[in-house]
Amino acid sequence: MTDQEAPKPQNSGRRRALKVLGATLGATAFAAAMEPLKAWTDDLTFDEFLQRHYRELSPDQLQAVLRRVEADTKAKYGREVHCEDVRPMEGVEFGYALNLSVCIGCRKCAEACHHENNHDRRTNNSYIRVIEMEQGSLDLEKGNTTYDHAVPAPGKYYMPVQCQQCDNAPCVKVCPVQATWKEPDGIVVVDYDWCIGCRYCEAACPYHARRFNWEAPQIEAEDINPEQSYLSNRIRPQGVVEKCTFCLHRTRKGRLPACLEACPTGARVFGNLLDPDSEIRWVLENKRVFVLKEELGAKPRFFYFFDN
Image (spheres, rainbow, N blue to C red):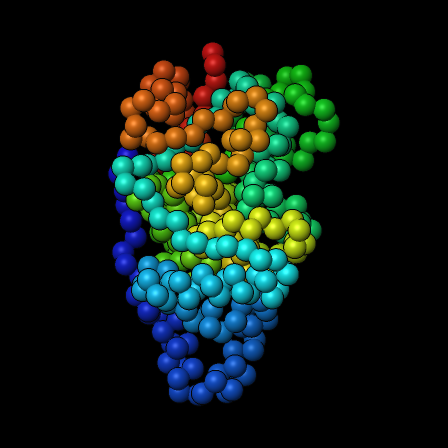
């Protein structure tokens, strides 16, 4: 698997123009001028909006940002949290595989994602959609994500779909401000303080794996997962597009994704594609795996297989 990192971001375009405007007008006049924009980002301060890109922050600046995230979460949600910056490990490229013969469509994975990643409770959001499919069919457009009967149902199988962490990610290519990029371990991430909410990435994703925050997330203090990462499960602001990160706040520390730990049937396999002794490599070498919409050339790192 090759690593295609986006070029280093520059303070250009809309962000640079806003910074110049702010310096020219002064704080009061600038705030007034930005009021229409602020309607989309009511829970985002001007300091956050004008913050430098994650990959341009010095270590001291990054620490200041992390402390600000913690303070803002305490002020907005009444919960003490710890937000850190978890970097990729050397010699690791993550991959995921899912055994469709074993998945029973219980949605425990989606529920675990909902809680682990501090999703909005009102919408019951999750990064995972579980699609009920007719046996013998691979047509996702004919699948059903809103089934409410007992599972598994006769004549059906179940296909969970989430971010495929593509090597040739269409979402990365269309972002006009380089707010999203692929990390060395293969995880596609988003700088949520840099995202302008244009939704180009959401439209470009062929897997419907990105979510736009139309409103500020609603979540009670006692429901918040306090162990957070800047590029992962911190509470995302209104007006940005968010996505699965393979639970990088866990996996980059040697733990497993929350969705995998919640699976009652062992349908999910996760690991280091560069490790010849890993379970994910065994699956790729011994099972007939496939990726969704291979013809599009996105090169997903999420694989599916059947036992037979």
